[in-house]
Amino acid sequence: MIPSKTKPGEDAANDTGENLMTTARTLDTDEPRRISGLPTGPALRRAAAFLADLVKDPAFLKTEVRSLIEEASGREDWYVAHRHEAEDGAFSLQVFVWPPGTGTRIHDHSSWGAYCCAAGTVLEERYGRLDDGSRPDHARLRKDWQLWWGPGDGASTVQPGDGGIHRVGNPGESPAVSVHLYGPRTGETDGRDYDPSQDHVCDRRD
Ligand SMILES: [Fe+2]
Image (cartoon, rainbow, N blue to C red; front, side, top):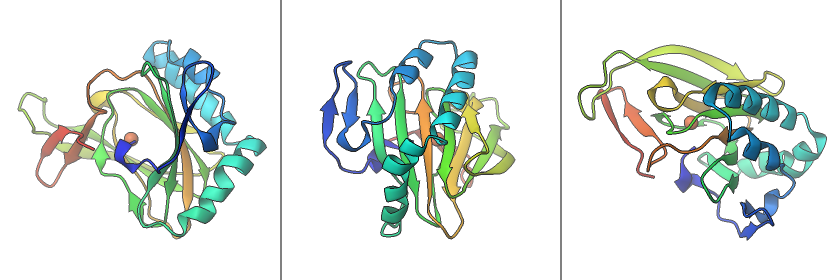
């Protein structure tokens, strides 16, 4: 999740006070609201189940996903097509579009997160730290694993901070769409970006 990638759209407010994009009113935000009040462990289990069910929902696929697959062919970079933000920062539900050959930087989040592929396939890489975090702006990473995710594979979950350093992308030749749910933010910025070639880490700026 990187906020600057949001696709321009009109915001609207529903009667629960959440900010919703007009194109994404079909999504259920009651369950994300309930999940956001749970401790991280139970929240991640519920978030994974919520997303896995969502990507099997024919109405969601029809109204939220199919048009994005068509739209992705005209885009050069990944972006967030729909974003549902709780006004109090309790959760953020986002639909990502991944044109072929796109991917994020290596990063973490200041909140817990869960994501599930809704169409196509995405590649997730996961990293751990080799250093103890005591040097400012310094982080030495090792790659722990990578996994391809497609519809029906369930959801991946990440812990907040450097317990969930990852990169998501689509190295394939067809567009992909994924749905992400993030919990309450614990910092001013939404996590950090890592550059393993320089052993560098910094707060995310965009
Ligand atoms: Fe992420």
